[in-house]
Image (cartoon, rainbow, N blue to C red; front, top):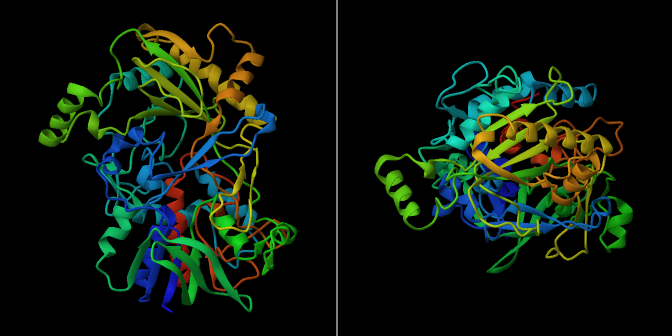
Length: 539
């Protein structure tokens, strides 16, 4: 039976960072268990490759929600990375951290119970900046020497520029840095890539350590449970193509399998709501009611329109255009291949422009709907603007389907279930429909396809949102940190699982509330901070 100083379960954004830091700085041996595939694939490396895979790929695992009664019984997909690097290997690479008050609110939740461990903006910012290698920004908010490449778009389509100008015409300011002093405005995102190659957590943090004898990376490793003896995590049981294995740990197990699988692994290990575990015949090791609860995700709803000319990325990946773009990329390192497919976005509050933004938008210069939208829409030149509620109030849950580790968990995200979320989404839809009707976009668009341009009432927009709402791929909160008096808190402020020693969680499951923006960078921050907590570098 093999023994390691540390075992990290889940080679996603957080797990890769935590494993790399423990290997380089602790002096201990690390086993990184990842259920998915290698991240080395041309479509994964190229920034726009995600659009070739999002509707079906071995590098994604598609969770299906339980029927959502408030959405008229809809069942929809929640794709998650099934690859080393996790979401950072398959996402659209947008680099966002959220707002300072996101983290100050975490700190307030934990204050008085955190043994001096701060979670405020001033506490987490150093983790972001030391990981970051930005190609434009160098100041107190940005790092330039880190291994994670953060870059401006390699190519900007004219449709993206028209979007930025049209939103400005509605009174929103141009924002050169959404991770800067203020989030509000419209502009161009930065991305975790450089010169046409993705900078995933696998490439940035694990690849430099692959020859380190203290690191073992096991791919295709499906974890059955964490082995708990006398209230302590002492090992992990997992399976791969060679069979079943048990490995032992000397110091700690770090769980970073993502907000849908982390609670599943905890419950299979006997950590979770006692009645739910007993229902499935699982011995209770720690009765923690909050495991699998507090599921938060950013809800996203599309607005799609056809263009009146050959604008955007339609057919750029087909035939002679694909050959031309490939040659341009290979010879000059430029052109559409260097774009992630989304370049521009905005943060706005349609109801109170001076208040913190309530809506994030992504401009995608194609006609695009998810595979579960079930709407017949002909291909053509066009644009899709997706609106996202950045601080949703709706909460869902993750439960076990059975005690069989091969069964997917039962996921109920409850997107837009809270009336406040629906009201915010309808306001966001109205705002960006106005942007589409403003110049210069208006002069390049033929017709809006969804929502129905002939049905503009609140009731019609609510029906549209219920029909098309989907995940923004940011599930979080299912094993949250919390104060000592919070009965739903799974973790303390050190990311330690309550009631079990030698076990921490460091992915987006751990957050008490979701940040206002994409979650890849915060997940990496959590991995980096977890390593510091383990090694005693934060006291």
